[in-house]
Amino acid sequence: METLMIKGGERLTGTVAISGAKNSAVALIPAAILADSPMKIENLPDIRDVRILVEILQDLGAKVDYHGDTMWIDPSNMINKPMPNGKVKELRASYYLMGALLGKFGEAIVGLPGGCNIGPRPIDQHIKGFESLGANVTNDSGKMHLKADQLVGTRIFLDVVSVGATINIMLAASKAKGITIIENAAKEPEIVDVATILNSMGARITGVGTDIIRIQGVDKLTGCKHSIIPDRIEAGTYMIIAAATEGDITLLNVIPKHLESVSAKLREMGAIVEESDDSIRVVGQSEYKTVDIKTLPYPGFPTDLQQPFSALLTKAKGTSIVTDNIYTSRFRHIDELRRMGANMKVEGRSAVIEGITQLQGAKVKATDLRAGAALVVAGLMAEGITQISDVHHIDRGYENLEKKLHSLGATIWRMNDGEDEGDWPGLYL
Image 1 (cartoon, rainbow, N blue to C red):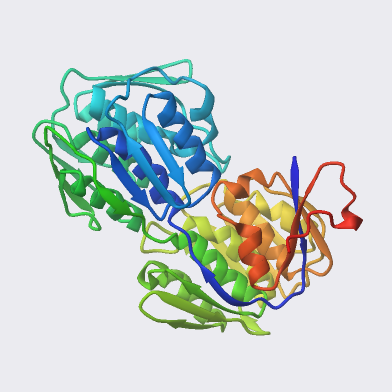
Image 2 (image 1 turned 120 degrees about the vertical axis):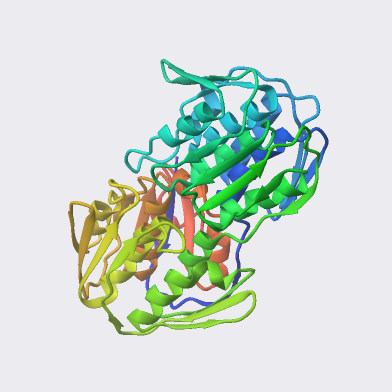
């Protein structure tokens, strides 16, 4: 097992290129299953979730060539076989295989997804969508069996706004007979990205980016070339890091509109945020005002950034409140930040944060992907050395984290269990 080591206190400056969006990549790769000919996906992030999906597609008979940020997928000889266990248990987004395989083969057997433990994330809206399209869905000891002789378009109202359900229904409905209408659909940029690749493959999807999406089913989808949008969550994390370290960081390859809620909160605190067509510059300050944050579906403040932002709020003078309206249990990072001296507590769906606090380096544990990002932010702010275990969670969503941070002036390295931390054997140089 590896441990991420951070020596805090450095002011980070420079430029950083943002990778392709994780939350798009993990849906776009399963979408390739629906094609009848080869396709090319560019700007892929080199992260653990992507590598797992490559292995899953290869297990299903697809030919995959993955080099750098580009992936060629030939799904023409894919077979439909049960996947009740194994790799599908290692990532949350494996549920997109349900919609893709159901749309292509009319049947799928997929184990319930894994991923980070951040509280209940039911897939009832996914199941509601599949059943509305005419599929029979059963749960047999933790594996989902979906089967339909013919998927037929219909009107589907989502009881809650769900990114995963919206995408999964789009995947299944793209080859359904007739018209499918998704009401109360999610509006996230990643949904627009998935619809873009499906339309390039021959699908007929309109209304993406609004709460009503219309899908005209087609008989055939073919391969295409597609470049993934920038990762707004990775970008938001580096914006927070710039503010947390009183730094001056320019982010390249971003879409500023996707980050408006984050930019607004940083400005409200007192940070300087400058935007151009495809870049954002954040200049941190020595003093910050408190802010309250409430996570909401896009274009609201993203739940994936409330944890890193919580670490930043320890620098604000006074009391800040962070409320997560998306996930009920996304505060496991709070106990870890308290090990570093943070004055914060959880009350129901909210975290109450008292600043100003000078964080101290400590041994902490990444309990999930974005909690790990929060600990990285905290480690960069803290006095002394922070040791973050279970770093594999962080690897699920951040490409070349140490390399990028080191280029900005951070002192960060990895150690394997049993190594002497005093020798700094894995210092990234």
